[in-house]
Image 1 (spheres, rainbow, N blue to C red):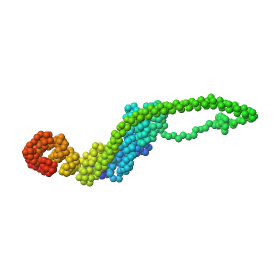
Image 2: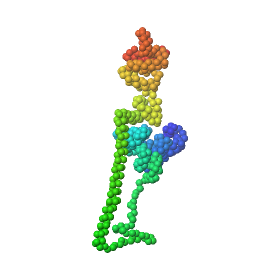
Image 3: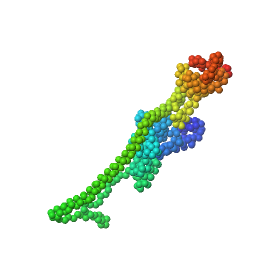
Image 4: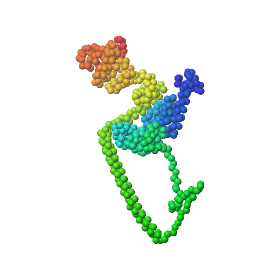
Length: 501
């Protein structure tokens, strides 16, 4: 454990050997973090995933550098179908400890199966569409969609909950009970699952047993070989009465057989045949009802599919955009890790170059703090690199690249004349007069004197005001008169204007 004040290695003492800071509270926090991690691990082993998530979050509140707790939290998220949350935890873990971290293997395995990640993203999107259908009153379409989702992603607990809720609304309580049992097998103590099961139990009057019990064979009643012996109890012993036999003649036997056949025919005619007819009619009625419901459901599905066909292209583009955003997010984290490594080794220039490829908005709060720390320290190097590359792009007449680089440099330092002047001329050369006038106006406001006069001439030219050649030559002689002249004078304009001021 290292001191939170100076980063020195701590001993068994309650005070830091380097700075003397009292680290008893820090030690207590780390102990609590480990305690919650151990409890969360126990919960995860018995598939109490909700409890495990709660305990692991508490562990990270006390020690955000607890790598084991963060990796386990990612695994639990992935087990509940939340792949994006799991990937975020693993990327943060890899950023904190780049070497010998099992989170790297998890990320590689997930990236090695892009189809699986795409299927997970598709199921999440389809779940949102099913939720929208429920809000619009199309529960049948939503139920069909959710069944497909759960077939592709059987760990998505939210999908089980929504499908069970649809069944409860339609009073199909047994189907809801079966769906909720599947959700309980993934997460035993999920509060939503238990609440829905309680509702089903109250409506049906039957308690749901989540534990699978082993059923034994039922005890058979005492009977003889032909099923005619009787049993009675005498004291503590059960006594089986043996069967009795009576002799009968051949005529009596034939008479009895005839009576039996007649009785059997009557039973068949009065009991069996009507029962069979009734069963056939009941089955036919059930089929008619089932086919009617199927036709109604298919009609609703057909309407929905017709609407989806018109939106298919937009759906494909949205899916591709989501995949691209996920890839950009992973790329931003990887570049942030590279920048952190270069910065820790003293390579500020390399860190600044890599940091340009990081999209800060896609990072988590903790990763943004790391980004800001590196950015504050390499800001000067980054500004110099953007400025030089922007001027070089302007010299080779690559105006879009020059505008992009110089705009980023201007965001870091908007008081540099060469950046503003080159950016204005890049806009002017590209034909974007409005942006060029705006940048020239900034030069007028920030650099009074010769620089301001030169900028005013270009503002008048771009605004359509007629300016004589003599005035332009006298006032703009040192400024950029063309692309080649501007490129030559941008490097020494600062020194001349500074002497005048």
